[in-house]
Image (tube, rainbow, N blue to C red; front, side, top):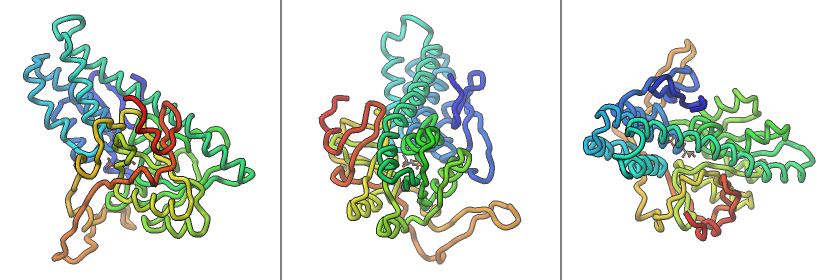
Length: 355
Ligand code: MRU
């Protein structure tokens, strides 16, 4: 497997970047059991739709290894892995794909352990290629705006982190931005902080800074005013699941950005690999479990103090409760198009595509 920025193989173990420590510390963790894979996904040591799918695939491989290939025991270990986080479809998709491949004629061919390892690696390799293609497909949108602006920087707003730390190896929403930058097209990125876990403030900014891409951090509520001022040419966000009707489940706050973009005539694109499409889902409101996370993520913030120490502080009265939905649903009517590895599709067209 080619090493990628968020994860790589070390012997037969999976090394992952501990994303809970970014941007202050670049730390890595070694995963070698299915229980460790589940714990890393639940604790958001790894996060982002594609990366949790990759770790899920390796979790299946670890389960096969732990049980010396006893398929019945492996199957009993998979439900908690598949459900470690409920909203992004890539995790269930990857576990189901591993199950399907490994349960087909298990007695024939290579040993189960070898097949599990190969398939997990293949899933990661495919994501690397998908991410590269999403960059190539999406850069045309940025190039067209750049021409209209006579080379002035294209102002792009993004939400959460749909970069290298979310989908190997250059993300979904950030992939066209990386490609544009590599091609010398001037861009500037408005990065939503993305409360409560601040994946924009901590991870997207870290990625863009490393790549030398001009960017500015904004509070989650600033996008509307920026659009009013004409300072946003284009929004590109990622997705955790896209339904058969084209509705988009993505990090909480995406819907409000899409509403603001529609009100101001700003094109709103969703970038996703094909594995994020859930053709079995017709009604996101009824069928998709929106992850509800600990209220503490809303009530407390973590950051670095002046001495360099990582500190956690409470921001609301102790008697105040909090509600913490991780994702929201953006109706397809608000979406200009979908940037995928198979091309850019307009809203509505996605519903007519075969799986
Ligand atoms: O809760 P997270 O950080 O795992 O959320 C997933 C995301 O990073 C975003 O919703 C992203 O836009 C889609 S993942 C490519």
